Structure formats: C-alpha cells, structure tokens
Amino acid sequence: MRRVSLSSLLTIVISTWTITVLAERTDSTCRFNPRDFRSVLNCAEQNNMQAQKLLGDKYLHGQGVAQSTSAAIRWYQQSAENGYLPAKYILGYLFQAGLGTRRSDHNAIIWYHQAAQADHVDAQYNLATLLLTTRELPQAPKQAFNFFQLAANAGDADATNNRGYLQELGIGTEKNLGRARQYYLIAAQKNHVKAQYNLGRLLLDTQPLQLAEAQCWLERSARQGFAPAMALLGQSYYESEIPNYQTAYYWMAIAKAFGNKAGRVGMQIVEKHLTPVQIQNLQTEILRFRIVKVTRFSRSQRKC
Image (cartoon, rainbow, N blue to C red; front, side, top):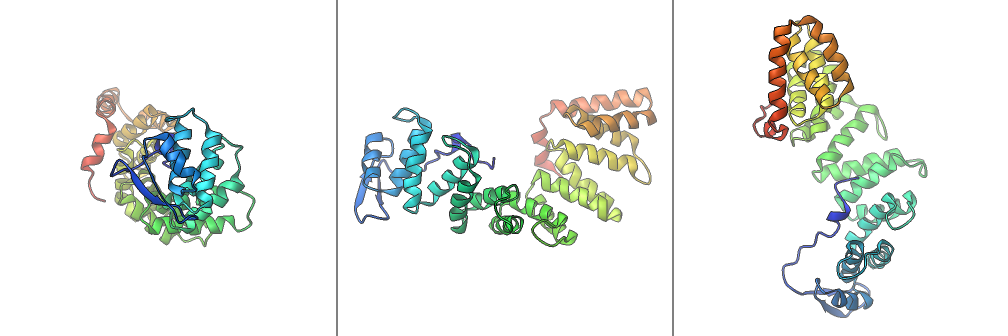
C-alpha cells in the first residue's frame, strides 16, 4: 500500500495549542484543542470538517476514546462530504484496504477520484494503481496512465517509474520505449531503486552499445539492496562479449544471499569458470558487502 500506514494517518502539524477553524457548511467559527477529545467532538458535532477528520483519527487510533474503526469511518465520511480533502483520501485508503468496513474498490475509487481531482498526489497514485486492477471501468488502464502522469508531473518518483513501465508495455497508452526510458531516467536520477533497475534492464534489451551505462544503473540499484538488479547485473557481466566471471559471480552470489532465485541459478553456472581460490576471495568480498549496511553505499554512488 502506497506509503500510507495506519500509524501515519494521524500525522498532524499543530503550531499552537488551539486551532480556529471554519466549517464549510456552517458559517460558525469553532475553537478546539486538538489534544482534547471532548473539545474536538464538540466542534465535530457542529459540522466542522477539520474537527470531524481529527475525530476520525482519534477513533482510528484510540486516542482519548475506545478504538473504533467503524466510528472513525463515520466521522471521516462526514468530513469528506463537507469537502475536506485529507478525509476523502483516507476514506479511499480504508475502503481499498477493507479496514473497519467491507473492502470496496468501487467506494475507494470514488473517494480517491475526488481527492485526485483536487491534486492530492498520493490519491492520484493510489487511484491509478487501483484502476489497473479493476474491471469496473472499460477505460481504466487509460485513466490509470493519466493519473500516474498527474502524480509524476508533481514530482512523484514512484508514479514516474510506473508511468515509464506502462509506456514500455503500451498499457493505457501507446507503446514507446524512448519515452519509457525518459521516465525511468527521471525517476532513477531521484535515486528510485526500481527505476534504476528498469532503466538498466531496458538499456540492456534495446541499446547493447550502452552496456556500461546499463551496468552503472543496475549497480546503483543493486547497491541499495534490490536483488533483481544484482542478479541482472551479474548476468550482464557473464553474457558480455568479454565475460567477467568474477564480477558476474560476485553479484549473483549477493543476489542469492538476498533470496533471489535467478542469482542462485546464475551463481551455480558461473562458478564453473572460477578456481576455488577465486571463489574463496570473492566470498570474502561478498561477506563484506553484507556486513556493511547496504544503505551506506547510496551515499557515494557514481554518476551514470
């Protein structure tokens, strides 16, 4: 599920002890203390949409009241119906996940769509992801691509990578490998691990003369712990015109250590080209890679 978890649904930035908010459907101003359940409840009952959303948060997490996801949904829905954007997004998430209510892709799409139309980037991303799996709408793949595009235009690296993937496969849009490469590159330059892998993979498949660039992007992904990139990087060294068996073994063995089946199979093939001493030395280097936290490598990656 996209970046949002129940623990993060209650992220509230409060600059003062009390907040003055204006309910959309009432012209009354209601002051409430966001940490005081009864204060929030009082304003929520006066149809204050921010208080209604905050009350939903409190029920969802059991803060100042017994935890009740169903009660949380009721207050989120009142807030959303009053036009509050964060409540619309959360409702979409809860319906999609089936938390406190029966899972309903239909209802999730409705609430995500309302939030996405108001430029909520996470709603745009989640809506696009959901549209790719639903059979309710005949134009769903095209709409999914469009919402990924909106989120990507807002700078979202996940959406940019997915936009490239749909462009590569021709899902919801025309197949265009050149554009797919461009989208992958934009996300890869933001250090998006899957985009780095996809860019390297695409270069290997379509631009054999750019082997060094492909291997560079695969290595950047691999050094962040992405096992498919490790395995493919090892394969690229094994299958090159002048094979580098030691480097191939190194990356395939690390991929195997990360649970990658292709790495395990590839390692068994490559090790036939190595001496026992070479394998022993490589195992020392592999152990060093695993001991040093993988995240450290992302700090000093070379440019591709």
